[in-house]
Length: 192
Ligand SMILES: [Cu+2]
Image (cartoon, rainbow, N blue to C red):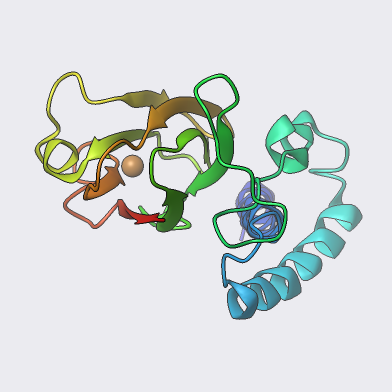
């Protein structure tokens, strides 16, 4: 194996570690999301990755890991302690990670009826994603005019704000070519 190939392998492993750490951090910021088991796994592997990155210095102190998405939080959801319903003037923030496995994490979001939510969508990995949210039929059909944030590239965060008026059903999805077909969707559960 040539030095260059080793370098590429190291970069790939470091990126993988960074992704796991990132997903773990975002999941940790989701109160009551019920990802306990997943979080444990993600943190365990992420820690191993961090050690490796520290040794190589490849990722240390890079701006890539210092983005605002790491420090932001998802506000408590309906039924969680401290829940405050989002309003048009003060939307509740829900953070979503779009993964290279063509999935949204989380893929279920609970909202209170009538709530206004600001979705902050961060892409992990090299695949560019979009995030469309609204009535499930419109989202499924990729209907023009349905609220969305498009072209969210690697480690970027885009946001879109939506008010969940009426009973739904509501959903979200990515319509980058092939992603919806691969199952890159999420469900909105309206409560109250
Ligand atoms: Cu996508």
